[in-house]
Length: 258
Ligand code: FE2
Image (cartoon, rainbow, N blue to C red):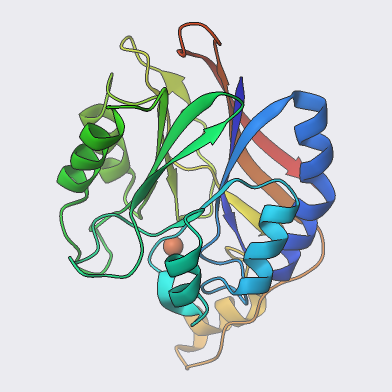
């Protein structure tokens, strides 16, 4: 089977590009299951109900979040009523929603875990222990386990990849909006890529209007970010799984221009 992971979907540009591209890609590549990071899907921060409905309509099975989980107030009801959306597992105890979940698709049970890094980010509970505890739970009945490590520092993501080596199907990073070219499969059979990249405006700074970002750096004056538009990129990775052994056969980066 084939499992697709999509990097941070940013605003309307990212949603439109993905809507245009994903259904055909799923069909042509026999994709069984799609995980997408949606924490920037609505206005660049958070996700609302209409954006999550759209993503599910076009073929996304699970939406993961990150540091912008609470960017749109719709998330509170979405996390309560829709188990297809998960937020980082290492948020404080009592936080609404779930940090991992299991899903049935085409006769296979797939576990998905979302964790948030702590390096150059807001303080949070330990992502390593949160991920390990989630894995121990999911291992009981899941055929496959995927981990979205939403983090700034490459070292933290790599360390988590090795920490979970041999315990999960794949660890992929999100958050930086820049795709890395370090995809690999370890000797123990875990696929890894430091960052999937971004699905959003290509000629931008991480999905935002570039002149505003430049001005903020040059003039050091406060100004509001605006989402960029125009040509889009779709970033992600496709994991090919052997049906019998449920082991990863390949991981292929996806960088499509639209
Ligand atoms: Fe983020």
